[in-house]
Image (cartoon, rainbow, N blue to C red; front, side, top):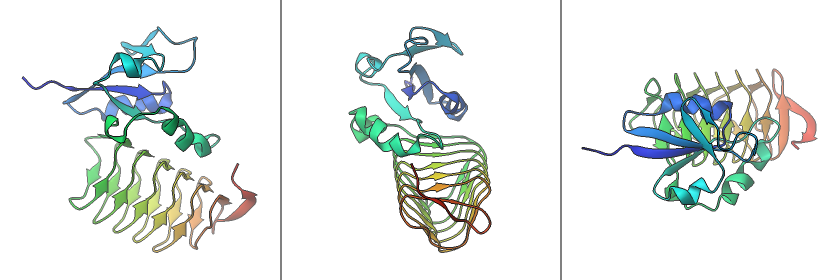
Length: 213
């Protein structure tokens, strides 16, 4: 009998809870990881919440890291790298109602939620979360450590840099490039290139207040 892949989800958070819906029949969550002493040792949804010591306690378990928000996304890479885990220790969860094309490349430590569609030759790098109902069209690339909120439309040949946050219901015109470390505000329409470390909002999206914090 085939053994299920055991997974630790870091951290215990809203996104971490949502990730449970993306587990396949061959995967199971054996614990959440938290840095909050108030919840360590408790159970939620029948799953124990552990401290980071669980990474050593369950050395065979794979890890999914889903940390980050519009306020903290810039620290996502630093936090994940700070776990000091080899890349092969991470797993990827793809909801059964996501549609991933045959030629799409998907990296490690990727969470893809329900309704996501990725088409021909799209590339989704390592350490990426894509929330429900986002479409990634042909030949587009999403850089490592980026967070993509719900209902984004990323048209063909778009390049999204590393460690970005794409706000919900945003749209990206064919061929545009978004630099590393950018924050795209909710409902923005990106029709031109955006440099590194920029906060951009609006229709059309324009730089809001200099560099993203």
